[in-house]
Length: 253
Image (cartoon, rainbow, N blue to C red; front, side, top):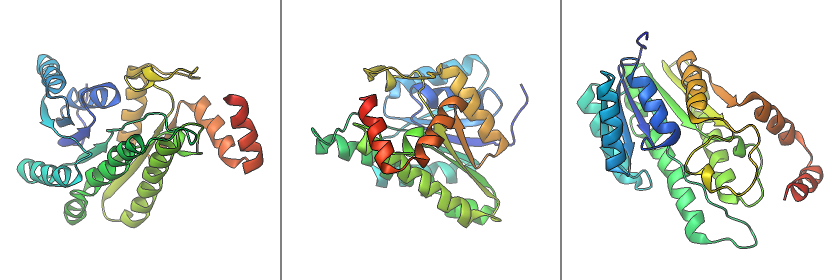
């Protein structure tokens, strides 16, 4: 497999699912990957799998919900490795937040991980990247960012924040040498989606989703939504007037 232009990368949420897959995909192509997550034992297993493939993954025990620690740790890694070339803010949390039965502790956790944690991850060494005139930051949003979906007030809003955050950064960073990519996955098999009690259209296997995301990152896409069928549906849903959208969502329930 051909080596990439990145020397080093940080991937959050790397203990399972898309984050784990992206860390392995990059490491197998010659990138030194710092794999960050809360579950140390999962990270050690990931590092061992990479080692067996003659790849290098460095486990980093980290909870992105602790923004101050996240900022400090990423800055330490950046200084120690001579500059991170790629940062992927993939860590995420989702749980039902129906307006009829909303629980603040769940809302707060979604915000701490998906909003504050993602923003801290992406902001940590952005000034250093600009100074070096190189780097690539990637935010993993969701097609759920396109509209406020039923029973997902916190999750949809958190991903909408990340989408807009990345867009503003992209505009600001044009011409600096720092690339910005925002990814919008649909339904992908994972620990989180395994909790869903509804039918998930166009559900992708993790490996397939990882391949699509990795290729979009390497291409330097500013935005990439997938699978294309679900992305097209959500693009149309985004254009619906509120009255039609509300009626459609009542029927989906």
